[in-house]
Image (cartoon, rainbow, N blue to C red; front, side, top):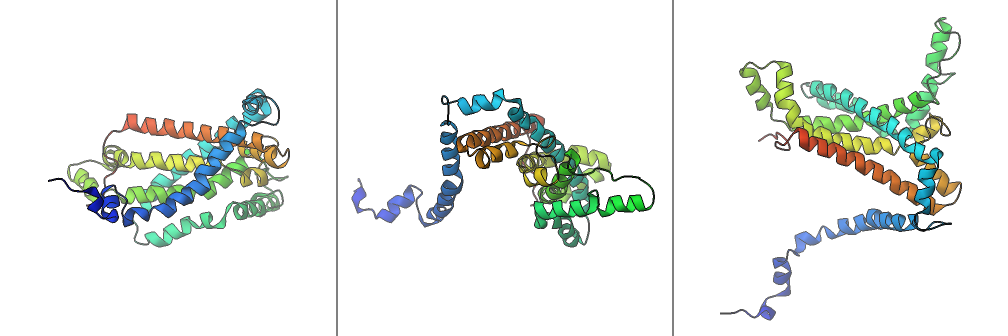
Length: 296
């Protein structure tokens, strides 16, 4: 006996295709994503192929033929990769220690305070403490340890220090969340079987933590790679810390060449995507087990 589809209410027919009321709740988020991310990306991509002069690929040819421009990729990577590794290496042991403490919330709050200050306030604090006339240099000169101020800012190390300070809370929180999701019973079972602290970390905790560390690395790298205020306020934006975001800014707001700025932004995104793909591929090669050791 066949059923006439026209007799079935429209609501039931839509629900059968997955378009029920619950699914429609996702619609605002989809529209938000399209309006703020997808459309600007597609617009910028198309704009990058509409140069002021030359053919379709003129902007990209100009970028990769000018060492002052394509050199910004290496400069940015030379900042972003060490900062990402440093924050991750700091976050792992601290997260292991914090998860065993009774006052975990208090210490976590203290550690994440820098992320609430913002890059500009952190830069201002570093200028007051580590600048040529800052407290650090003035204290050392007062005690006769140095005769002239030590240049700690307006160079590579000033930007790197700022990125580590602002990036550590983000990396730490992600690492702590992944670590807290590992069932303590697994580590206790290893200890019962005679495994020492290093063996438990190497064979139990690290393999389960690895997928989360890979994601943390990617997110922290993307955050560090987009550095701009620190490179300007604490670095040398026309020299050692001329990162790729500065090149995009100069193209857009100094040369008023929005097509070129879009091309630089596309190259910036491609470099970030390449590093993310490499990291995730390496994670897949190193570990093929479950995504985590969740509790319960």
